[in-house]
Image 1 (cartoon, helix red, strand yellow):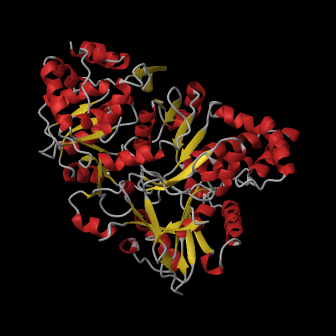
Image 2: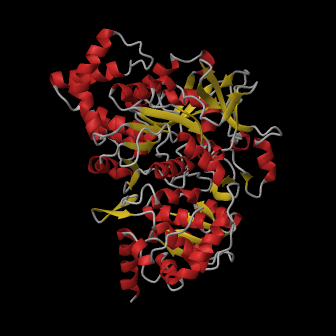
Image 3: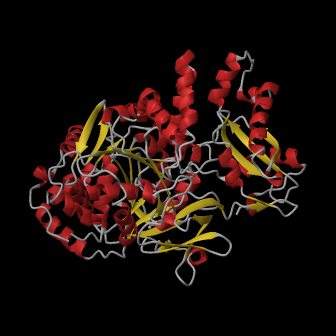
Amino acid sequence: MEIKRVFDILELYNNEYAELKDAFSYKDKGSWVNFSAQDYYLFACGLINKGFKKGEKIITMSQSLPHWNIADMGISLAGLVHVPIYTTLGGEELEYILRHSDAKIIIVSDQNLYKKLKPIADKIPEIQTVFTFHHIEGIENWVSLIQEAQENEEELMKKLEERKKSVDENDMHTLIYTSGTTGNPKGVMISHKNILSNALGVKPIVPIDHGQRALSFLPLCHIYERMLNYCFQIKGISIYYAENLGTIANDLKDIKPHLFNSVPRVLEKFYDRIISVGKNLKGIKKWIFFAAVRLGTKYDDKGKNSLMYRFKLGIYRKLVFNKWKAALGGNIVAVVSGGASLQVRLARLYTAAGVRVCEGYGLTETSPVLAVNWPDWNKSRLGTVGPILEGVQVKIAEDKEILAKGPNIMLGYYKNEEETKKVIDEDGWFHTGDIGEFIDNKYLKITDRKKETFKTSSGKYIAPQVIENKFKTSNLIEQLMVVGENEKFVSALISPNFNYLHFYASKHKIHYRENSDLIKHSEIINKIQKEINLVNETLGEHERIKRFRLVCEEWSQQTGELSPTLKLKRNVIYKKYAHILEEIYGHGEDKTEKMGKEGPGPKETFEKKISNGMKKLINIYSSNKE
């Protein structure tokens, strides 16, 4: 069948995957609760019953749950526009999005998010109410929409069919606000065609199929995780949602998934945990462990490994690397990595360990994938983001910027034609803002962000991301930002890995009371200086970090230095540490100003269509209501 609108995916569940009982699962009080795809229709009827008109907008703010998927597809079925937002956003950004999006209702997952968002929503007359996914005493629950619809099921199903017929593939499916590192977030308008072209484009690349499992732990409001969730649904793959980032290790062992999506930072953390285990080994076991790691980082993905290398790797896979795969559940076929650049060293190491990491690249505005490495080595190259996705066009402009064109390019920015014209030129090419090149005329390699490249006062260009990425292998450094625009030399602000520093301080009897004391200690400063020196040796003279300063804060989404996709918010960091920059360069110049996406409906009754998971939610709601 032809899938032209997102909710057309449901026909696959009505036919090919009718027996799939664990389309979506999440853990509740220690047990996995399963939901079926039929639950989608219930929520759509509830929205139509509430009087929502085609094209109106609904906000969700939730952790990754099956409830989110049910709401997402229900909103789509009803011809509405889903506006998902990150749970980590601050008050100002939330208020801006709530006002700018023209949303009518909001659905949040839990009480904490309700308390965070309700006072802001109360200030906006257009927002009718705030629902919750989880039951909270005295607060309206999303299940009430479903229960109210049951009283007029037959008529609502007819209305639903009419509404579905009115939806075109070019209609806006979702409005996604970019996390942004400067200014107010922009609302990216994504059509059904945009995101489906991407989901269908990556379908042949995803190396698992119906009957296998995927673990999901990245935010579903992020276009990357959401698009792949659609792809999983198209392929009939069961999706299990991790409780949170802290439970991933246990969830991997519990679910034994065949694939999961990740960002480089999670893979780096997993690597750090494995290395810390290795450091605690003794004698010959420790020697074998690190010999395996050293060998793994020299893996060549183009078959240039010598016979001796392959012999040693076979031994180390049995002695060391099989434990790595076991820690990932034992069934992993591949890991899909996106959102930021993955260290080539780690990509080689994971591959040597038998864990295939497929790195890709894209933006919210491109729905999102432009290029991706395949599990097939003939369509893959480590150190690049792979070949261009079929159906997408990419070219490198004269200034090395990556330009893209295709069915996946957004409709534009919501209520912002001026910004839309800035990124989509008259010939329809989308300007990504990233700098790149093609390797062997086939594989795309990202080298930097166009907007983040700056000049020193001597006129030398500095690509900060390239330098920053070199420090990701350091156990001492959690985050580092390169500075020095229009200055005589390059410097760095460093947020150290305090977990490691606390361990180091204890081991070496370094006395301190607070992190602010620790970062001033000469032994700590000297140790980090050695890390700086090692990287400086790999850089050009004009790129080398001449000075650095440690900060006592850990940078995060919650404190504002990182975006929800874990990118550095450079303008925020510049402003926060202006006093340190003044001390480094002898003035307090504010850099913030310079930083600049049909068939017949089911005929069974609601009771027969409801999954066990949904029945459980309704029972909880009804009993509490009584």
